[in-house]
Image 1 (cartoon, one colour):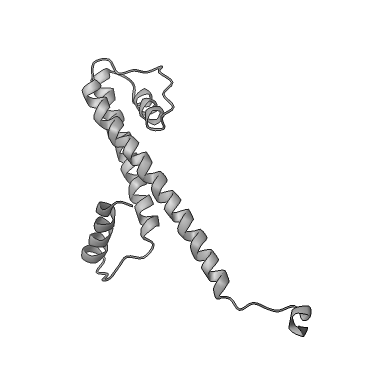
Image 2 (cartoon, one colour):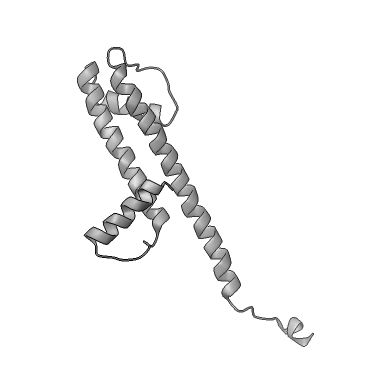
Length: 132
């Protein structure tokens, strides 16, 4: 998780929600912020590409989804507006990377905490183990 995301979440919780201390469920919140960031990049990038290239909004959105996921079929290529596409592509790839990192962190934290919760439970002995 990025330090900027952590400080953004902390600031929102402190100033807007009036919470003090470290935020809870930080990884889930970072995943949500990354997902919203990706959606905004998709929608704004598609609108800018539509305006600059003369494509339909659906084609522009398709172009960015295929590019951000690194599939790259090559059926749509920006001709006149590469100066618009390149920054959005770089930002989109970092957003996808950020989402994958946050999702992996959420899964790892859940796995680690599930293992520690199992250790905290008292073990029940079977009858054979109790006899020994």
